[in-house]
Amino acid sequence: MSDSVKLSYNDQTFDFPLVEGTENEKGIDIKTLRAATGLITYDPGFKNTGSCKSGVTFLDGEEGVLRYRGYSIEDLCEKSSFIDVAFLLIFGELPTKEEQELFNKEIKNDSLVDEDLKMILKSFPKSAHPMGVLSSLTSALIAFNPSSVDVDSEADMREAIIMLMAKFPILASWTHRKIKGLPLNYANLSLSYVENIAHMMFKRPNEDYTPSPVVVNAINKLLILHADHEQNCSTSTVRVVGSSHAGLFASVSAGISALWGPLHGGANQAVIEMLEAIQKDGGDTKKYMAKAKDKNDPFRLMGFGHRVYKNFDPRARIIKKAADEVLSEMGINDPILDIAKGLEQEALSDPYFIDRKLYPNVDFYSGIIYRALGIPTEMFTVMFALGRLPGWIAQWLEMRKNNEPIGRPRQIYTGHTRRSL
Image (cartoon, rainbow, N blue to C red):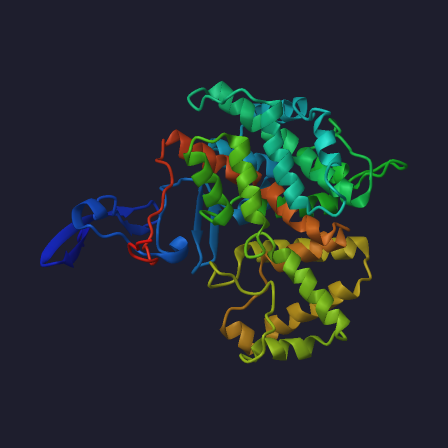
C-alpha cells in the first residue's frame, strides 16, 4: 500500500504523505498543499478535516466505540469514579492510591471561591440562562487569579487544573441555586467529588442532606460519559482559543459558550421540551412516532440517533440502566417520564427505527435522569459542562504541550470583486 496520495492538477502531480493513528485511522497530510499547488481545501464544518493529533479519546461511530486513553467507557463506568476518570484524561493514566488521595486532597483544599464572585452572580437577573452565568463566572476567575500560567511549569499547570476542578462545581451549583432562590452552598470536605456536587445543588438550609447512593451513581456515570468526546464543537473551541495562548480559564469559558448552542449541549434539554409538547397534545406516543416516520411532517424525534454514532450510542446502553434505577428509587409519578418510556419502547421494537439504527441516545436518558432529580431544564447543559470539564482541560493541555500553531482556517471568498466609488 502506498504511504502517500497523489494529486494531479494543471498537468502536474503532487505527493502528499499519509498520517496513520494507533487505531489505523488514516489521513492525508496537506500542510504543504497551498505552498505546492496554490490550492486550499473546502470542507464546511471540517467534517473531513483532522485538526490535530490527539491521544486523549478514541471514537469509532460505525462500531459504537468510545475509549478514554485506551480504556472503554463501559469499564470506566463500572469500576472508576468520575474524579479518577478526570485524572486519567488530564494526566494520561489512572491514579495510584497515593495519587488519588493527593488529587482529592488538593481539590478539597481549593474548594473555596472568592466572596466577591457572589457580587457578580447577584448582578444577573434570576431569568438569566445558567450557561451564560456559568461562562461569565468561569471567565471572572481570571480576575481573581491574574497570574499567568507557565505551561512549561508542571507546578503552575497543576495549580491551574486543581483550581478549576475545585471551583467549577461550586460555580455550577451556584447558578442552579440562583434559579431556585436558595442560599449558596459550599463543599462538604467529608464527601466525595460527586457527592459534593449533589450536596451543593440539592441541600436545603432547613434540613440535613445525605446523597442517595443511586443518585450519586447516576450522576457519576453521567459525568464520566460526558467527560470527553473527541474534537466536537466545544472541545475544538477550547483548543482554538487556547492556540492563541489564551489561558485555561478563558479557553474553558469559550468552550462553555460553544456547548450552550442547541445543536451541541442543548440536545437533552430539547428532549424534555419535545416530551412536554407531546403531553400538551394529549400524550399519544403512537401519533408522534407516526409523525417522526412521515418525511413530509416537520416533527423531529429528539434524543434518537446520533450524528457520529451510526450504531447504538455506547453511552446510552450504560445510562439507560442508571435511568431505570433512579426512576425506581425515587418512585416518581411524572406523565412526562411515562411518555419518554413509551417512546423508548416503541422505538426499540419498531422496524423503521431499528433498520435505520435510530436508537435512544445519551441525551434521551440524561434528560430523563435530570428531570427525575428535579434539575430545571435550563440547567441540563450546565450538568453537561460539569462532566466535560476534564476533557476540555486535557485537550487544552495537550494542545499547549504540543505547541500547536494558532488556529486560522482559510476561506473561499465569494464576495464582490474590486469596485470603485
